[in-house]
Amino acid sequence: MLDIGRRRFITLLAGAAAAWPAAARAQQAAIPLVEFLHPGASEIGARDVAAFEKDLKERKVKVLIYNSQVSEKLTERLRDIAGKSKVPVIGVTETMPPNVSFQNWVLGELDALDKALSGPNS
Image 1 (cartoon, one colour):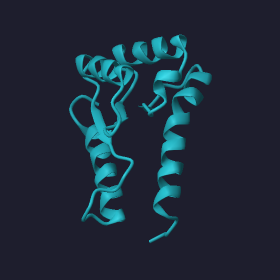
Image 2: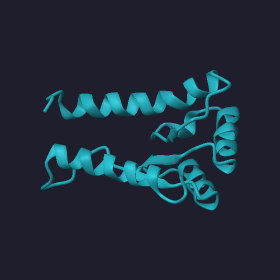
Image 3: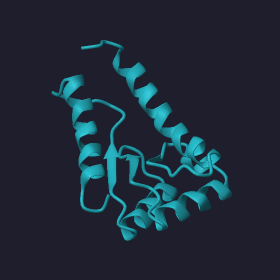
Image 4: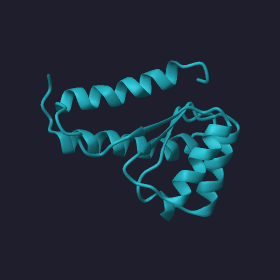
């Protein structure tokens, strides 16, 4: 198995997921597959938040991923919109749980994403 280190892996995964919505919106024909909420999400502009909400309401988002270790009003509101729109919502953690190997932790996060993307609401 490739050993790139836990922090580097999480940084790469989070960076790619956080950049995806902006890249997808820049290409007008593209539809976002995943939109990712990060702890600094409350610092984004009102136009971006409105576009994010619209994408959720129109089910252009296949799954909403959020950091379950951070709670903010914006995150909670977007989770509520996703739930009402029947967009799957999954929480991920940024710190490894005790008594779990790094590989099992990451595989568990990825399994939850796979399940959300292949579920009845996807």
